[in-house]
Image (cartoon, rainbow, N blue to C red; front, side, top):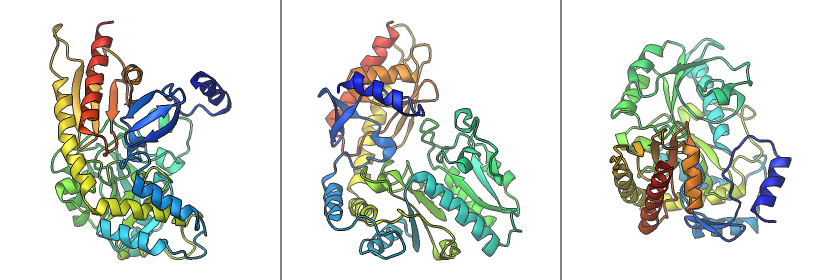
Length: 409
């Protein structure tokens, strides 16, 4: 079946909860993917950071293949030989005592919410059912009913109520807003160190440091959702590292599964995760042998520091090249209004009079680059960290050419 056949079949038999670009990928290697007709594209989305280490990373694939031949699932009713090394290795990577493994990012966020509430009741002494958690405007933590209940995106929320109470929404990037919202029943502040879905929004310098101080002063847990920003993407292991900040809980996912299987986790010290007792939380597939084997391979890659350094170096190149596109052309208009981000992660605001983000993404696809739009006229660029310097330059060249073509319409 060709691209058109597969798109028609998929659209006729699946729920329309996504609006993908009209490309059907059959194979991939490194930073490149190939469609069913054999056309190659540079992947500049990397599965929303799930593919930080590239498609088919040899170390990760070898670990998965070996484990597939041995053992894939026991459930947590029994132990298996990959579990201990995974939780210990990830805890050490995070500088924490304990890890609670799950599958998807949303599950890990839900886990963090449950743990924070239970900690609030059993350790902090918050009255039963009175705990509140402070969250940010324009957040994206997943799509379960609890999580979309504190989203400010109408598409995420609309038609899914009633919603779970206990969340206070404040302005992202404002420490004062958090400070004003905290009370004696606040158990946690849940924040993305960089907001990905919102357009790769980087908060003001000192924001995360202030959040840490507010949480410490008020006996509140600082929960950092590093699902997209963590594990090398921004040039450090965690985006919080850029301010030298250590949260009470890391929420991890996406890249932790190496683009092979869904793996997520919450990492925290024993006085926090220790509030959970057998039977109070779990997952049939959470911490399964295949997931742990893949996770162990991912941890081994991060422990070298190679990927973090590469993301820093190539990130400097990416942002330098993108900022050049802000310069006005002969007509006095600049096709790019703003560039944000850190490391190999950028949000690019396009002049809406030139094109929407979707139109830019479609133009890039025709030129062999895959990217994703968000919030109207913004596109996100997040290639695998294994991308070459030449390919990265080529991708920006294609963006420049695509914008020129769109501006000339």
